Image (cartoon, rainbow, N blue to C red; front, side, top):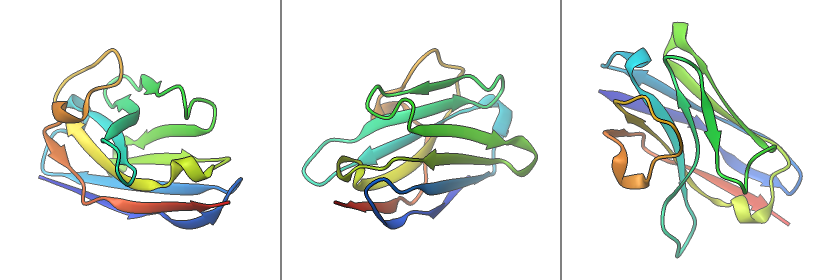
Length: 124
C-alpha cells in the first residue's frame, strides 16, 4: 500500500496550491481519503475528506469555500485544491486513507494508511 504525495511549496497569502495523493495497493473505491494538516506546535487536524465510492466531500469550517477535494478514480489520485491561502494554512499536509464510507471528517487516529507529508508555507 502506498500513498505518494506531490505538490505543496511556498506561496504568498491569497495564492493557490494544489496537492496530489496517488494511491496504490488497495481498492481505491472502498476508501475515504482525508487531508490532514499539522502546524508547528499544534495537533493534527483533518481539513477535508472525500468518500471515493460516492464522491461525497466534507470540509473543516476554516477551509470551507477555499479548499476543494476531488478524485480521479481512473488514476487512483485525490487532489486538494487550495485557494485564497492564508498564513494560518501553513502546515505539513498529509493524505490518509480509511477503509470506510464515512459521514463526516475523521479524527487523525482513524486512518489506515498515510502519505509522506508535504510542506505548505504561506507568507503574509
